[in-house]
Length: 261
Length: 223
Image (tube, rainbow over all chains, first blue to last red):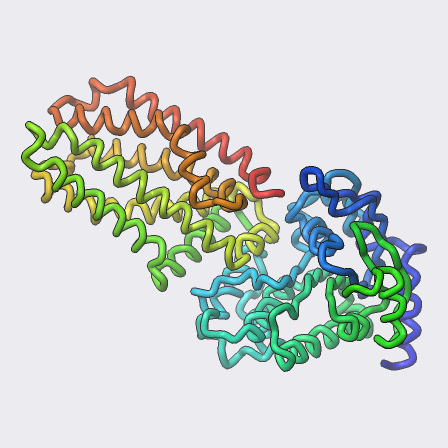
């Protein structure tokens, strides 16, 4: 990382002052008698890469689903780009890209057909050029006419990233995108995410706010400007982790989560 | 993007996927065919006139096969996570409803186009009049309009295959009874113009549930 990048990332690690791209206010989500999120307050600055760590059942996926407007909070507010998600959901969805452990793709369509379908839903001006660009970005140009069901899990996840970036979203939500991948495929996917995170940090044109949920401390820290630890539906740690190694972070994580991962 | 472009994109996607897998059509067709054949053997030579039982057979085959198709159509989307992909798009969620509805309707019509000639052959009756086709069209539309919403509700429940018929059939009763009554009366030689009440029930049902589904589908799809 260049000095300028490092400085910028350090600045990004102080999100509370300027306008936030994502802001959660007293967010609560309950499923019947079980409360998944308990009064979450969080701000993410434009262009910042925030990583959320936490044990299973901490509420990480619930949080991402609420940010993606796939689930409605029980109480509290979500503001994206200053707009209330509950009131402006249709408009805000245009600025969100989501990659989760489920690919959100159709396996009986080809890679190109999948992207063309989503390009139509997002009403892209020049879909063909954008599809070609995205397939090149994730290294699937040669497989564009192949059905997704013939792809390996790693290729499916790369195509899922292409789908999520197709409409050039300002906010990218990543929910454990490397789940189920073999180490090699996970490493390749991680390389792509690092590339996206650095592009966001180095160029105003590529400025993209990224929120990632992951179990992998090493991979998470590699793309994080700032990290949050979620446990029992509450934020138990929030702070800058730019430049921090897994060895530095693990004792911190164990202290807040109680040693279980 | 206009509402109907979104609807068109979803229908295109469903048809394209179905032409490759034939998942939905094959399960619906096999079930409908089985119903027609089993009922034929059950009733042959036991009832004075086949036209007494054919209305029931036709609507049982349509509704049971349709339920299978509705389940498959939403389960396929849910299991691969692609339903969430659709919901993430910046489109009116009622456009997703109409896209899925039209897709389901096309698959049901495709099964009916194959099954009805078989019914006519097995039971030696003609169902190829404009009146019969209108009743089938309205009944199938009503079925798909309600079924698409209930399939979307059921797909998020644990016992979704069981849940859909439990939720759906009580609500479908008016349209199924009207369908059976009108098909029977037409086979008895009555004119459609004399069946105004049943036709009204079916038309009001179709319009009413389309409006309700249009207004509620967005809420149905959210947790």
